[in-house]
Length: 186
Ligand SMILES: Cc1cc2nc3c(=O)[nH]c(=O)nc-3n(C[C@H](O)[C@H](O)[C@H](O)COP(=O)(O)O)c2cc1C
Image 1 (tube, rainbow, N blue to C red):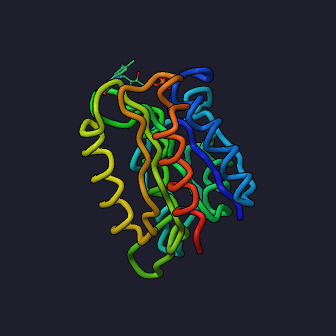
Image 2: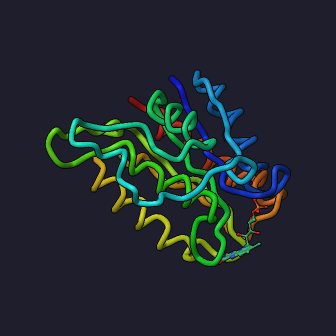
């Protein structure tokens, strides 16, 4: 099972990276193959609404030829997607949001309709300085996203009051294990 983690933190050795490092171990133990991409360190612009991707003949590759192009292919070829992000200002980070905007190029609702995200499983894993409630809008927006683009929402995992010790506490390690088992269940 191919699992792809898109990490929206700017810190390659930060809290979110510590969380994904532990997540990756559990995914591998559960029999998955996992890759992680650090979005902040790539050249990824937000969608410019040129609509070149929504050609009348069907879907066309996104017109912005930056680092999102290979990542969009990774997204489509994955069985499970995990969006890993710290909460910045009650939201996912700007780099995560820019990448998500680019998913616009994977679905055309008008005839001839094409949806390269249809049925794909997606989950979200977050770290935050405060309690979990700060992630409410992020989880809600992912639910709207899944409904509109017909992805299967696989679940959410959060480490509140996060630091590296908190991630390793038995409570969060157990919750993480449950999260991994849940998202990888067929
Ligand atoms: C610019 C910025 C905004 C933040 N906004 C929030 C917030 O709205 N709510 C919260 O609980 N924590 C907030 N935090 C704290 C981070 O979510 C938390 O420290 C997180 O674990 C950092 O992960 P990282 O090390 O991967 O960047 C913010 C941190 C920064 C730098």
